[in-house]
Image (cartoon, rainbow, N blue to C red; front, side, top):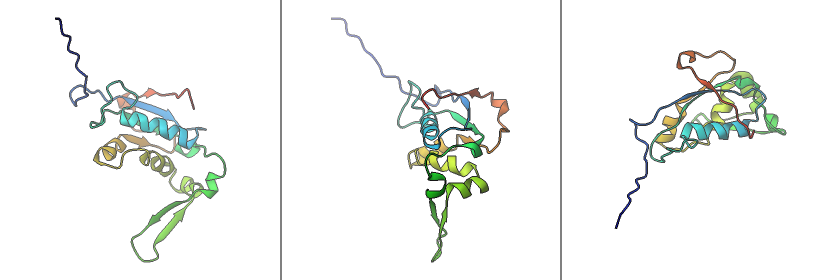
Length: 150
């Protein structure tokens, strides 16, 4: 009897190649673009996706200040943080965040879509968000990434 043995391919640090992608966030809906980028950072767009290993790619986001929020989220959504001191609860809306630090809105949305583990923090380090069109990663020769379904 002829037995065939099929082995499942598992991603290893020696076999994975991390690509660089550039995404233009101008007029893109915050949640839709964030979920697609989170998939790329995790490596879920690759056939070699492995849950216990970071096989994702680097993503550069430009024009973060021009991201679109649907409905009344620009004024009604609230980011809450705490300073650690009594009475130190602080609130901020996306409108204020986009004026002060536009990168925060996209970084916050994407980071909350990644796992809350060491692996998730490693994935988040591969995200590079810039408010304008300039970025210092031209040497990596990033590929332009367009999303069809958003």
